[in-house]
Amino acid sequence: MESRMECYLDNAATTQAFPEVCELVSKVMYEDFGNPSSLHMKGVESERYIRQAAERIAKTLKCAVKNIVFTSGGTESNNMALIGTALANKRIGKHIITTCFEHSSVHEPLIYLENQGYEVTYLPVDGEGHIDPDTLRDALREDTILVSVMMVNNEVGSILDVETLSKVVKEYRQDIIFHVDAIQAYGKMEIYPKRMRIDLLSASGHKIHGPKGTGFLYVGDRVKIHPYIHGGGQQRGMRSGTENVPGIAGLGLAAEKMYEKLDSHREHYFALKKYFISHIGEVEGTVVNACEPPELSATAPHIVSVSFSGVRSEVLLHALEEKGIYVSSGSACSSNHPGISGTLTAIGVDRELLDCTLRFSFSVMTKQEELEETIEQLKQLVPVLARYTRR
Image 1 (cartoon, helix red, strand yellow):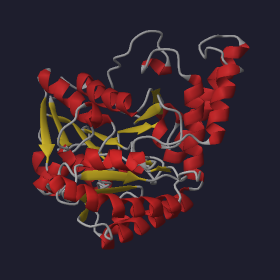
Image 2: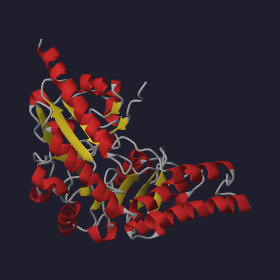
Image 3: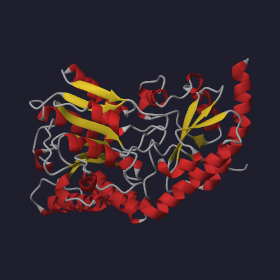
Image 4: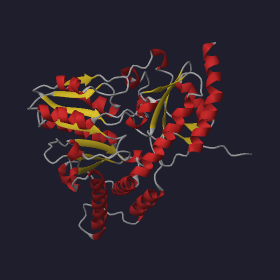
């Protein structure tokens, strides 16, 4: 019996860890398992792994080791940035600005803050998922303490011009904190927080072939954050609790590997994306969202959002799954809160296509053969499912 090709195209949800990362994590868990707060050599060895990981990450961002705070992932990084900043600056003001299509790990903490008496302004985006800088400028107020935007949208791959947006913020008032959710951008793009005037930046390990349950928050030199995890005072009091040394070590190595070959990785992503977009039109009733072919390089290289007219996304997702093809109907986190995508609504996707959209996302391990197989299966499945839906 001929074996079926497995096509994993849900890398914006999570990636397969690098083999070297798995080996390092295993070694630290089994051999160098000391508590980094212990004073004996086992503790010192563990502390070295944390330091090395921070150095590796700091090198990718061109920042200091002291700017890196390790977390349990992107969700915690975003919560720490938003809630911690709001608490630390509440005497200055209680106004926060964000966009209307942020990830739930930004949106939900902001709802929490609204319930605590903060006011949040949600900026609109255009059909390509971009913010008009003038709209941001008009929203800034004397009591604004924080602006939070994502660098790459996790559903459609639009890239926000965070450098221009940060300039607008800092020209209005230097002490407004500018936070960037870089969870889908880190490892795929060059990001230099100091040059780009980013005060806080969130990243996640499992999006870059690192371990799940790992991430970090870049904290600028003069940024004040109110810690909300209290205990032993680890990480300079920013986040108490015994550090996840194996995960942190794996995260640092994954970050280093992603940036060592960033240019070749990006060429690989864009080649896959160009191939996929150029052939997806062969499937009837398809619309690629927020990615006009001439502007391909202006979008994230690893994400493609496609709507399939007349076919519900969940039905098509499971039909592909039966063929060994794994994709997403949107953000993996949003599957816990099913409903119409706020991102697709925000960029103006036609109402009848909102529940007919899949996200295809690539990694450094994705092969063109996987895309070829996916296109062929879509050509067979979509017409049948569309006819069935119309009955």
